Image (cartoon, rainbow, N blue to C red):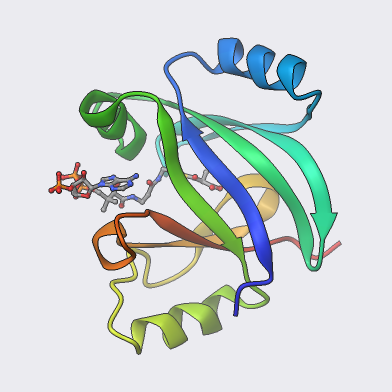
Length: 140
Ligand code: MC0
């Protein structure tokens, strides 16, 4: 079902500061920046490599407000890995297959994600404590 790790999402207080750190330290290039109001984040994608069905990235996330998912996460746990996102060929099909196995899917229908992707989240409590995201990348 999973084709690759699409991205690791990292929660931070200061997006510009973390972009400078990750791009300079690991020599990564920022390929996209976006504000996603629905998800309550300002974010940047740093490209690592290309794989089957899309690339893999580090995603840096700054909350738009304290009561957003990333804002709440930062208040509770501080900066760090917020979620792991796996690339799938068809996110709607993956949602159905995973929900059928009893895992809570937080998005019944795909939502808009980075770089035109279609995404859905799985409840961390049903996935060993890891907030898990499914990503169907944009077809080029
Ligand atoms: C919360 N919990 C987590 C967690 N967030 N565990 C692991 N990783 C996380 N990121 C745990 C809490 O510690 C708590 O456990 C329990 O889940 C309930 O959390 P809560 O703080 O009470 O918050 P809720 O229940 O209101 O919301 C948690 C939930 C929510 C995961 C359902 O954050 C959500 O719907 N997330 C999906 C959307 C999202 O995260 N969007 C931002 C990234 P205890 O044991 O303390 O009870 S958007 C994005 O990344 C897009 C742009 C993209 O990739 O393209």
